[in-house]
Length: 128
Image (cartoon, rainbow, N blue to C red; front, top):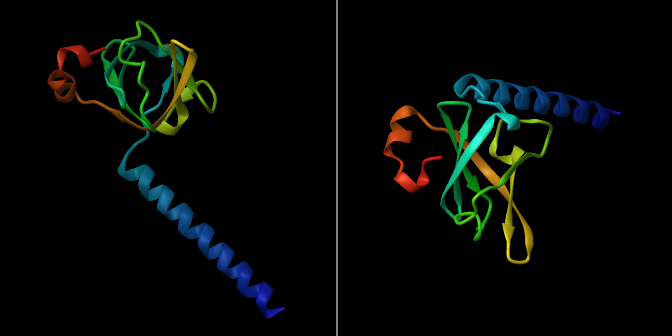
């Protein structure tokens, strides 16, 4: 009986700690979300980095989980949300691009909304 009580207390403590950490992370860095339909341009900086224009002036930079070799020469890609119709983190996003052997899916691992200074510092070919 004491073991069950100790496990219950441990579980509650762990959940409380996880909620506290998640709340602190939300306060430290507000989540920047956008709807996939708002994306209107892209530029592949290399086969691991894709910059996406959202609406008129926002640019989000995605780091891909692995190499996506055909993304830097394609004229168009599909940006798909893996969890609904909006993207709030890199893990929510997947790029679908054409390759010589058919569609290629490239999952993102991280996403960062670029500041106006970061956008201005991008190489010309990396600006969406």
